[in-house]
Length: 110
Image (cartoon, rainbow, N blue to C red):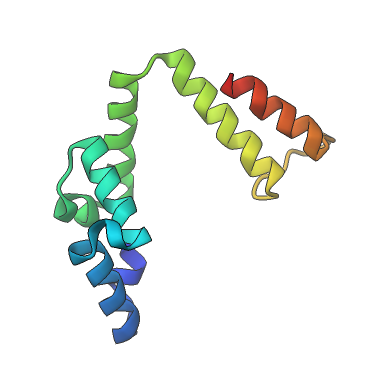
């Protein structure tokens, strides 16, 4: 999102700026920013102005305060399974089919 707001393309920058700052829930990007800001009690300018490493620390602290370690671990494991299933993450010498991964995700979410 920050990449779009800082794009060299005037069109990309304008559309992203409208979606985030003015369009709110009417755009997918604006809706995501608005939801994130509400969930983490951040202003739009604060969210968009934070360096990624600082934002990551803020979100991690928030998550650890509101969720148990078990719940946090289950969510991370589920995300990793989804990333493996979508070929965004690979595990050497591990052979899991899509149905194996779907079953693991189901078990983690129930």
